[in-house]
Image (cartoon, rainbow over all chains, first blue to last red):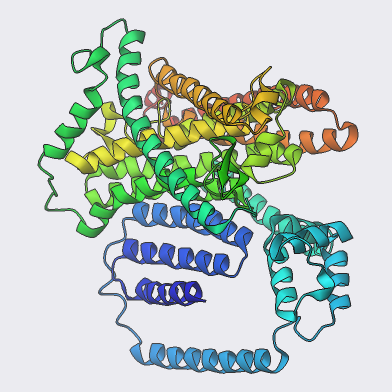
Amino acid sequence: MVLLVIFGLVAICSAICVIAFKNPIHSALALILTFFSQAGLFIALGAHFVAAVQIIVYAGAIMVLFLFVIMLLNLGSLQDTVRQNVGAIKIFVFLLAALLVIEGITVARYVDQNGGVIKDQSLDVVIQRLKDDFKMSDEDIKSSVEKLYGEGTSISNLTSVQVIGLVHSEMGKTERIGTLLFSKFVLPFEVTSFILIAALIGVITIVNRDPQETA
Amino acid sequence: MENLPLNLLLISSIIKILVIVHMLLIGVMGMIWAERRVSAWIQDRYGPNRVGPQGLLQPIADGIKFLLKEDLIPEHVDKIVYIIAPAIILIPALITCAVVPFGNEIPVSWGGQEYKIPLQIADIDIGILYILAITSLGVYGVVLGAWASNNKYSFLGGLRASAQMVSYELSLGLSIVGVLMLSESLRLREIVLAQSGFLHWNFLTHFPAFLVFTISVFAETNRLPFDLAEAEQELVGGYHTEYSSMKFAMYFMAEYMHMIVGSVVVVVLFLGGWYFPGLEKLVDSGTLIGGVLSFIIVFVKTAFFLFFFIWVRWSLPRFRYDQLMNLGWKVLLPIALTSIVVTAVVWLVSESRLWVGILNFISAVVVASVVTTLVSMRKKTKVVIEDDLDILSGESPSFMTR
């Protein structure tokens, strides 16, 4: 919980810095810090795999390219260009803030009423979900319960908070994410990779045009 | 590791952290000495041999020199970024070793009970992904230092470094997928445990991937033949041209730390970790001797690989930039990709490491030769186009005669 607050605050402050800094390189640095605190948030929530992917993809690759492009274009300070359309920007910011507040209230009320997603579900449903979605056998469930709550505990005499803890710890594991990606979500997964391939081929075709054609 | 009592876990972790960090720092000193002595040996010179026996205290003399030098901050730099950049490059190098196993387990008796302590600071679920994530941050130190220096040479070095590291990170990440498929885990400890027995060492089963990974580690550490970011003959000193005294020393140390960590990762992933033919049983026995022996084996393998690093640096010339990009994108990347597909299909069909190894090797040779032929064919057409352009620009003799 403390970690969540710390990382959340750092994320918000650095995100504000991204738009407040005049120098694009400083903004990019602040954006990297934002990604890091987001990864920290994921780790605090137990989603280690997502945190690692966040750092590899965003901080490790995309932001390096950002820096590369900023350096290559040699962008100077943006002092002169930003002071246009202040009125329109104010209205936009106001609308966005209002939207965020409404969204926050709705989510908080939903969580308050329903107590998260799995709180009111019976134990059998949870076990069935573990077996169906994560392809876990009885022994798998038994061994992860014993790993979490000590030798000799069985899933039937866990409290509901402990069951939630079990599901959360399973969801964070790389193995379970892999199982989900290649069983339940195989179609979205394949569609995503297809879209990425299409984008890749598009880029190659644009770059690879015959120089004489463009001349 | 789960069933260690909290006190023991805390104490053992603190000891492990202290030992490993200090080993890394002393290792850097050893590497500075070894680099100078080995390069001298390769070039038939003596090298530094005056300070201490065989010049062993030379790194300490160097360190004192760095500390006592004036710490210049040039007027035209971006001060904050300039100061934090050397720290940014040092931190990833230091924290990568948190998940690397330096040996098997050693037994410790605590409160009347025997516990086994793994020689690894943290055995986390995402293991190798953590290493990939952290090493991908090493480039920031170089790029930011280069940009903050506000110097044309530094700037060019930084541009080269960012493009090079992003390119080679891809093949670095893809080449280990085959290894992960066969060991069925991302945990580095389990990857080593899957390699007990010499024939199970991953560099035999995944020889092309091993080569790709090793070359990419060279590129990621900015070592010759991939040190275009420094290229002292072209760019003065590249990204650290404007750095002096301890800040320069931090860049210097970070390079060696990256080398050490990279070598340990290669040993763990491909060279069998703490296993050695004939000693498997002793190493796995869980006795104190076994634990110490496993540590020594990892140490010796790493030392050999570090020697290999130095050997290559003083034997090979630097790549040209287009050669570097061609190698990364047109040779290493296709080899890494085919190795994934071949490993997956062959392992699914036959479940035999022998066939995976043979077919991996053959497919890599085929892919490499096909790709190089295609690339050389493309180059010829390019030359033709340039000739045409020469005619258009009026420099060609044929145009003059008209």
